[in-house]
Length: 477
Image (tube, rainbow, N blue to C red; front, side, top):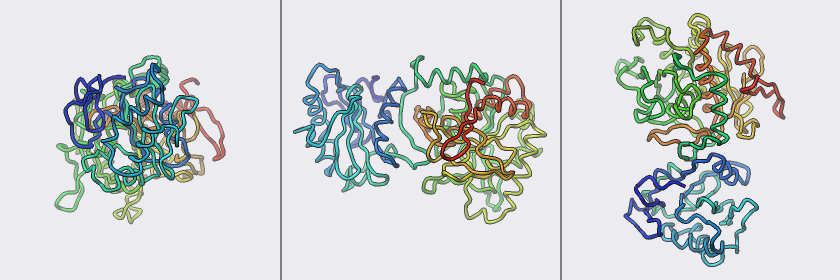
């Protein structure tokens, strides 16, 4: 494993350790370092995630990277495990997890066992447990959704702990990983096959309406040709703000890099246009208003849209990505905005040759607007094993057709975050981003929207599962 992000020594939850295990400079009390997990081989990460999923149901989780103490088989496993937890014991706040760590130090197998994969499991209390992957020195804390923080730190003493790295809403599960560089990894091979089959999007343009794109992104460097936002003005009206389009949430940056990132995206040579609209998180969902989306459509289709590289913006857009579907909010108390959006969709598809892609949504048995519209290519998510993701939406469209139009992997997708790190995200938004990347890549040879839609259908295999029809995109037609 590579070393931590903060210098020559390995980082460990607020301390920096030299290779010999000596204590180095304090980073910040109880602060989890930026790069908690550095794993070059995605197959290894997949094993961790499968171990993490263990019991069914949503879990919060926190990973510590302690690769300085990875088990190499040269010593007794029980002694190694005890020494590992002795080293990190002082970093844990008082509580059930610290008591469990004490048990591991004195008698590792009192409440624990090592499974056939070599992963060590230790019961804490209730649904909580500690897991260790010895070969790469990863310690994981797992607990029931919403319970991990107060069980791991019941008195709230670890105030500087970066709890943004603990779990995530069920709709957008996040883990951390270094940029996958192993050319023979399962993920890299799949990406290379997609690029070989569909192209890399050279000369094509993808437009994304989402939370914006981070200026720190390296995956899209030099290829974001326009970036702006829809803002509510002092006059109470919405206006385009061509000076402000930076992402502050991370969703737009992640989906953009899945679609067109240079190392993690399909359309790695495509240009990108980003339109930011106001988004807020409500429970497991990111919400934005129909009114804001309609304004973005109006600006794109009107003469007031900016000229980019000497051409009108709609002359350049080949694919439009609406990654996370849309959820209603109080401002959307009228069907007027929905009707306006529905009127714009065929104009974009038929007159401007833009393929519109939208996530079906992260609510099983339901669909989202406008993914349910006939001019929109709706996308659901598959697991890494090729099964329908448990939270991926499905249902009937306005014309009675089965939705979504197709599925592709949307679980543990490598993408970039706000700080320029490669992380993993899960959700139908991530699956939709991949499909938008494919449609953009196809525009490299043929821009016509109907031709690209038809060609994509040639790469869909129709399967069935307990929820009905399961159309899957395959790189082999």
